[in-house]
Image (cartoon, rainbow, N blue to C red):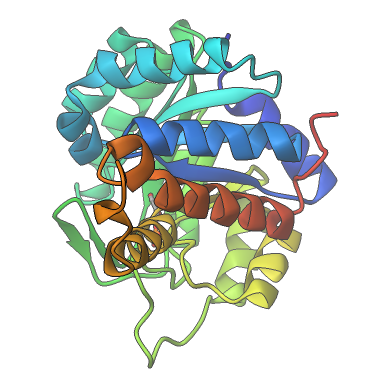
Length: 287
Ligand code: 13P
């Protein structure tokens, strides 16, 4: 059975580590994330953006895929299926489809509207036992067509949204989705400290790809308990798959069979997820 993400994140928050949120894109990805989490004996969050959900065939396809695969693989660690950057309508669809956790991202709305909609989604999701993530300020870069310059979240706004009964908060602290530009200034730890002191709840670090390990560890020590990673898994998958094809392996025997063609890429995702889990400090936390 899948679980919501509240308990695993509260435990991480209390014990000073972070749970990995890994975006899934297809069946191989889902399997890779679950396998890595089981091997590392940690709870994990399998996440899907609305773009990935559309690609994979719909909300129920994704919720059921993760559920059934979890059962068939005999996974014993806690697993949540989480909607990433959900719209107002998307969050409602995810709640209906059996997701166990939902992010409502109303950060592009005026604050009052974001608060109003977050409250409504939080009540609805909680009535079904799901966990809820909300966002204020913008996470920089681009995620499924939504662009933001990467603001620093306002502490008072964080306090307001945190008081609505949400379970974890995504707040911009200079983080950016995708690969960081060469002139990136790094995470803003002063702002993270202020937000963390004000909200006293697990904080979510989006844009986990490419943040140096020392900054990740410092962020965790200041209250970050969930770290989102997407692009980095895509990059290693693409790299391993390219190597396979460039080596002509798809032309040897039945190397064109998707089970073979995608195997190196999938293994690269497993390795990357395991590496992140170790770095986030959550390995063996589910034992
Ligand atoms: P990256 O693609 O930069 O790893 O960010 C993932 C993310 O924050 C998903 O919400």
